Image (cartoon, rainbow, N blue to C red):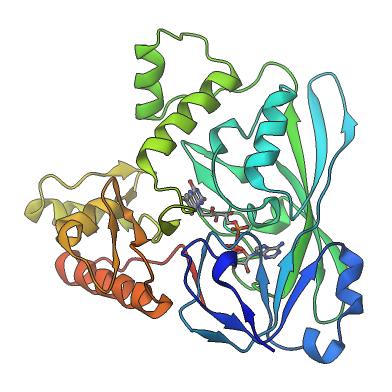
Length: 334
Ligand SMILES: Cc1cc2nc3c(=O)[nH]c(=O)nc-3n(C[C@H](O)[C@H](O)[C@H](O)COP(=O)(O)OP(=O)(O)OC[C@H]3O[C@@H](n4cnc5c(N)ncnc54)[C@H](O)[C@@H]3O)c2cc1C
């Protein structure tokens, strides 16, 4: 028996798994044969941050579908909400907006599930999910031990956490607990494109709904809908280099965009590096970068996972050769 993963990954590439299990509650793990659970497994959410490079996956795949959104505590200013790992992320954001709960509005329209949001500490438009997470509950798949990781135990950082690092595919998150504001929302509108749209619309005191609407509009314009054109969002992280290296690069590449993240480190937009290597004009076996955002690699139709992978590695080589910067993948490659 083999199971197609084509509809379970946003690149839309064909790949088959020898074993696929749908997990609808934490108890479902204990019903699985220990010989399977103790193998090297793959945990799958919405499949929007994954590239199946191989056309056949030997490892058992566990697709997490645990549902439910529940308020478990509140006071005058804050509400605490427990959300099943299989709830669609944007469904949760819209639920928060409907209830006037603040904290995740900048993260509207990010595809995928709630249980995957802590994995790479999803972020967009100046906000990261870590700032709203109280704890993550789940289970070690091999020995069925349950654990709740507090926010600080999650080791959140730029597009990473303990779950993407040493616990990758070992610990399944089953629930995420959030704290959200009920009033006096902390609005973050400093991102240049958000600021300028607010100004154009003469909105001086934006609500969380205003912020969400504007960010959704920008994203809809800039990013391809993966249901129409296969992709997994940003393929690479934006590299962070030290000040000395940046000053040297600037001598040769005067226009290189940059954001100082602290006194000694500079973040460089990976999209600029990719474009400077000429990738806007390159198509390889039905794979290219997206015309509005070069950091997004797209499947132009029937591309194979291995072609997307080869194209991404070509980009890495070119950027390394031209700028001496090693790009790191944000997407999980299997
Ligand atoms: C068009 C587009 C735009 C995007 N924009 C953004 C953006 O702005 N910011 C951003 O940060 N990301 C963005 N992404 C990436 C992606 O949406 C996020 O990383 C999302 O959190 C992935 O969710 P998923 O459920 O699809 O995870 P999957 O792709 O299924 O899995 C991702 C990783 O998490 C692990 N995992 C999944 N669920 C669990 C679980 N319950 N327990 C343990 N491990 C688990 C998987 O093993 C894998 O390593 C974008 C993607 C697309 C396609």
